[in-house]
Length: 176
Image (tube, rainbow, N blue to C red; front, side, top):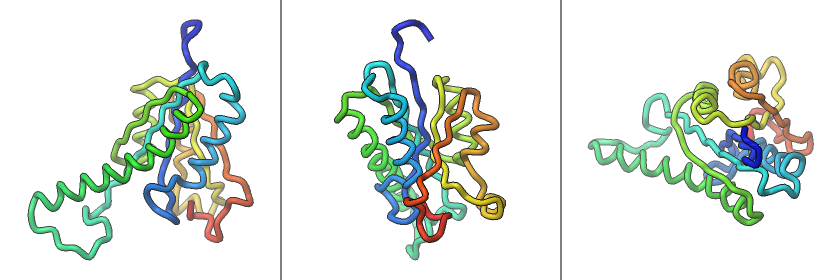
């Protein structure tokens, strides 16, 4: 990094499993707030935040709906709706950055979040990656898997994992 360039922090963000789009997950919001408070602090011109939201394609392509899709246009409208939802999620983070004057970029990709985040880290080459963690126990990790653990092992940059606070944990820790 050349002297005077902003430190580029990539953040993987996702929607709330409880409230859905456009609400950010507890872990994403917590990681964002932690980054602002502990890293950026008052040095807003020294940092640029890069927000990546990875949308996971529904396995059957029907997004758990009871609708019948009968034409290619039906699928195009479904894709447009999903993209709009992701844009609203990113809008939350971009608006917060603009309110405090910190530079940012945001984009959406589709796929397995673990793989896509690591691919995007390789492509974008941020100074480091910040991801939120739900703090799942070993039993839950086996069935759910964790994006943060995978990124810590495979991302081609330093990774900071931010656990959500105990008082933010929903009744079912898998929810976020």
